[in-house]
Image (cartoon, rainbow over all chains, first blue to last red; front, side, top):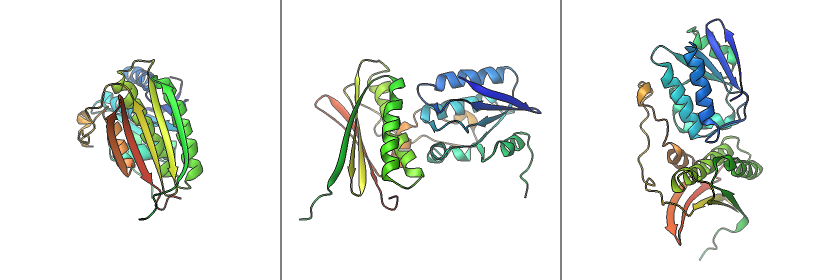
Length: 117
Length: 148
């Protein structure tokens, strides 16, 4: 899957350059994420600003990625569209993942920095 | 006796049982729901529900095999919308499956699959599944209430 990636100190920011993470593309998404983890990236920000739609299969692959990080890994998620936000709240996964409106906040969370204000 | 709700518009779609084709249904439902409803959240939930139902038909009823038909109907009434997703494959045995258990404190116990019906039940007001004449149909109803 085509992704834009960059490093913010020890945080690895991943931005999928696709509109959908669904049954047709989820396996490809997971394989790419596992490659990043195997390369030693244990603090990940998943920037979903380009992604318009995720179904339960795509969500399952995001959960699987979180599990692959193990106890010491961190994954924060940012920049959700309305429909993606809806998926996380319907499945109650918004309680599990740290979700922020901006990539800057997501990076701070992944670095373990507290909120401002 | 009061008259029943008047049918406004009906749309029927059919796709081949390939996951790549689900996009077409998704976009059609998105267009109809966004045109009909001003609410930002509900159209997305309806699109998601229909996609989950079509995915289930392809993955479970047809065991992921291409070359079978999945039918989708959209019936728009004055105060609600009804989606039907039909397949002629194996009938769903999980129609009454329990909701997945989600414990945010235990990563390893989190479900990676089996959330489709849970999403549909959560998003829709009424969900019905029946097999008749060789076709299995999941019917999903959403009342507009204050979403118009």
